Length: 409
Image (cartoon, rainbow, N blue to C red; front, side):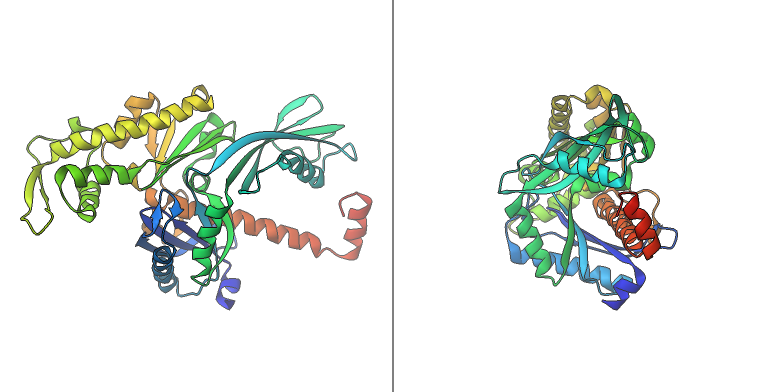
């Protein structure tokens, strides 16, 4: 425990449908994060982002965390963890407050965001995030940072993300059975966006599509703020299942075939290439055409991308994402996926990998680690915010008296 405190370690835990990924980073003096340990293990007991076998999930998490701790030579006690699933919902809300001293303070900002989040939420729902979009002071709209500005009243627009409380509790229970504490729970696509997007993309308008094993998580930015989030409960496991059924091969070998030989566009594969396919029931392996494999996969990718396209259209932001689509997650890496996506979306598409990584970067420069690394970025912002609050609280009595007179105490 002492090592964690001394080294300012932050841990991201991404419990996915296919894999559990644990990443630990050290907060450096320049406020950057250096990766010091990585652990990954196949996920058992998860389905479409939800827990369906608690004990199996606990075993998977323990193995990934243990591998990470061995690499980093440390013991961790708390994690920032991701959550996904069709139960995750979003809504945009607004709030308004009077400005007490005609000049906006942090307290005013906190109050107006609190007003925006004060919408009734069902008892079975858990509030995950309240993300301010922009502020309005009197008649001036589109303000990004209102602190210090003058006015009489202030309004705020905020994006609110909620999830099913019981689904969140099940994930927390898995972590606690590994003798860990869940510091915060973060929506998977939001975490991924922290790792793979540039500020320019957020300003121009961009859509992140995190394609995992069980779900596709979507987050849309315009003008630097999040406008829409969604989860589609269909993803990469459907492709694995198709390969297993059509080629009559075990699921674990179907996954290997998908990772090593699959292509999302059949036109990119030569008719002459062949692959070895294991059979079930002890039958001998067979040689199959790689082009035939692509013919099986292409319709499934088309379906996945069309579901995403429909969601973007429904959100109303299709015309505002000038920077295009950023695909991330394990299923985004397949050969031909970017080219096929550009055909369907008719806009620029790239695969997003974690940006600006220090330390053991070679272990996480992969789209499947986007969520885990993004959790570290979220954790860094949270830790720096806490440190700033502590510094303010430790001000001397003279500063506190001055703050009191300013109405900031």
